[in-house]
Length: 261
Image 1 (cartoon, rainbow, N blue to C red):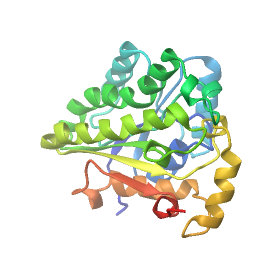
Image 2 (cartoon, rainbow, N blue to C red):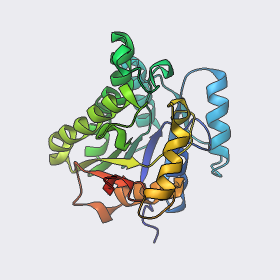
Image 3 (spheres, rainbow, N blue to C red):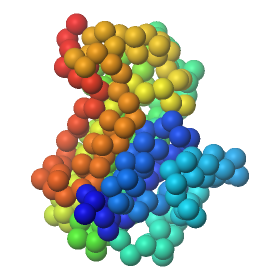
Image 4 (spheres, rainbow, N blue to C red):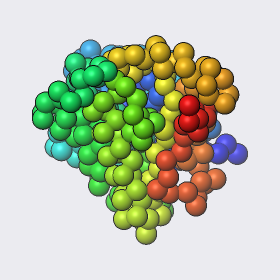
């Protein structure tokens, strides 16, 4: 039997076939999971997500629009999910946002208040907002796994990552508090700290090419992370193999986080 046979859940954050969410969904599906998907509102965004999901081989996927900056839209998306599915065994939170104008080396100190708060809102608060709606669905399913995506720039300074690093630090702390509160319902909450992968979001960070070059030289595995690396870890977290793991940040970055110089 596949590791995720009979498990159903929601994947939030597929923008195209190069996003971490896409690789996660690919791995979940390969192991027998059934996935539902959200997309940003608008015909263009729906087409982009639908095309990416089609690359996964999903026929007639469950797709629903959701702007995570709106509590009403989050509530509506989870309500619609509950009308279509009896269970929620996993939730993948793979969204983040920061104004790229402030993602340049030397510009962190100039970050305006609204850009700072917006990054934390979309990148971190939304995990708590979604977990609130996932809780009753997972509780009636006998438990579940919530996972979100972070990066080492939330722990150490990565020049140019700036306010996104602050937001990722908030995301990781949010996951720990959620893990404690949701644990009695057998809901596990964990973070995957993935290495640098060239995506729409990561391309906005100034100096990204230099990061990739350094990883191939300094990381213990002497290579950059691949989407499938993170996908495999997501399968582990969604499966019963990780039944005793919660509140953790798991690094999937070819070991670069262990290197001091």
